[in-house]
Image (cartoon, rainbow, N blue to C red):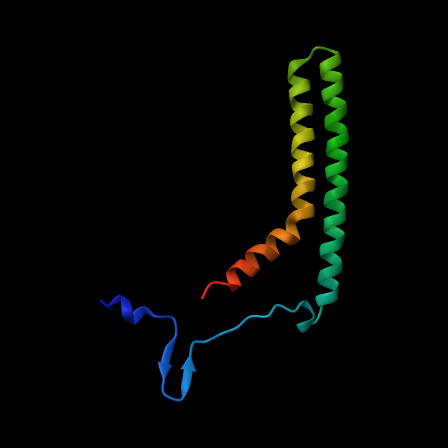
Length: 109
């Protein structure tokens, strides 16, 4: 069994440094990077449109259920409104969340 000191991620050998890697993401470094960006933007737009549709349908079900004193329909409509709003929030915050965790990960040494 190796002692804990032997599990260091970087080995220092006179004259060279082993196992030292770096990362700098660049979507244009590979062919199709621009296409991938357009695909992400398109999927993001569709997801927002579907969130809006879910919100409108949920609001209508909530209103009809409340007006008709149908607790189940009112509950399902309210849940659809909340889930659609949360989905739109996550879609909008998605790039910021990913970038936050990427930059937080870069600070780990």
